[in-house]
Amino acid sequence: MEELIEEIKNKKILHWNYRGFNELPQVFKNYGHDVREIYLKENKLTCLPPWICDFNNITNLYLSGNKLNIFPEELCQMKQLLVIDLCDNNIELLPNSIQNLSNLRQLLLDDNYLNQLPIELLKLECLEILSLARNNLITLPEWLGSLKKLDKLIVDNNYLEEIPNRLTLACSLTTISIKSNRLRYLPLNSFISPVNIYFDCNPNVNYLSYSILCQLLELGWEDGKNCLINECRLVMSASKNIKLLVNLCGIKEDKKDIIELPRQLFQVFGEDIKIPVSLWELSLRNLYKNKEDDFFDKYYTLKHDIFYNLLSNGPISICLNSHCREPIFTEAWIVVGKSEECVFLVITLFCSQNCASSFDFPSHGIETLSWDYYDG
Image (tube, rainbow, N blue to C red; front, side, top):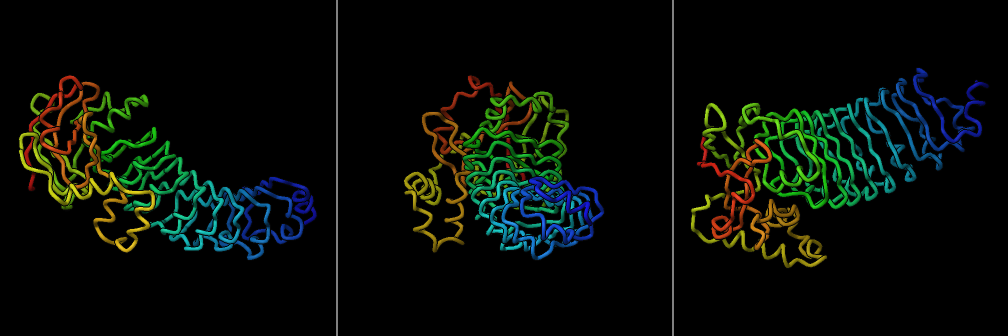
């Protein structure tokens, strides 16, 4: 006991990793008020004592490799916390009270059993790093893109099939690591910030949008230059997403491949289809371009309406024609091709038949390929 007391006294950082603790020692309650960082990794803790929330100096708490079955509610009362590490525990849910952690910058929850995220996380306006690798996540909420200071999102080794479109609008995001998931495609739109996307071991991804490809190459991306199309294994799901059958003559031995488009696209047309843009799509484009700063507050009553959701999640892409740059939400004129920079398939999206037909593909290093709708 006396050794623990001496170890705690006047310490700012307390290293108690690998101690075999079943509970936080009681002596900490009396002598630990100067401690700011506690390392309690690889112990046997199943809960935290109620009095832990009385320690207002603690900013960093590391509890990975314990036996916690729930996110400790006591932590949600510690508004001064900057870093919480709860990796490698048995946590299945995050409490709604997590919204109280208004100063939190890092939330590390790898190797748990989470299958959803509460919307209360949106209240963490200072959050910079969110790490959720090796959980049971099937989807990510669109509102993640509204976390103003989110810098790194790590979601490797989950069961994710897509990246939320609103993440392309995240202003502070620099890193998304989404390796070893079930991605079917990346967003069609480029990110407004220079984001490094790590998507290794997602064999269903067999194409990139031209905008994303250009952004990745500008950031020094090398993975795609030697990644042959016929190394991408496509496993089709039973979703309602639009699928295209692409003629790969001269590129791949079986000469056909199927690409699946993001679910936000309701209709796509070939560059030779001369029909007007629908009123639905025109309305979305005009409202988005002319929206005021408080637009979404004014239309709060439409919060669960599909129209509102499409607007708040942002456009699926921007017209590739540099003379236009019109936002695209639910319908587009599509050209599928192969880029000289990378042997991945690339798709280019346009807001109208006029923009698609007037685009100079050879000057952009794109060899166009024929495609048709796939109904299989």
